[in-house]
Length: 125
Image (cartoon, helix red, strand yellow):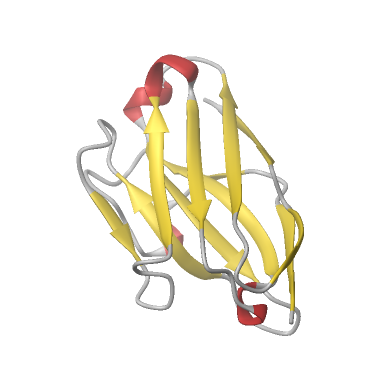
């Protein structure tokens, strides 16, 4: 089983960019479908992006499509979330998650059984 650690969050002005990283420890990283979720204060955790085991297939939430891009490097056991054109409504705690159940990128939070601690992203207007 892998353990996940996110990094790269911070404070950025609207229109700016950040790249989040999620480093996995343990074996078999490439056997997990990976995803990014976020949770704003007072709101439920929501799907942001998901990527297949090989990285050949991705899904992005409509709210971030065209602005965010998920990618992974299995050799480095790392998944990334490149975030461009950030908006104040993107402010949230961002979580990396791993799924051993899914066969492809999954939007359903219940499919993900391993979670990181989260990294805060704050976008000022």
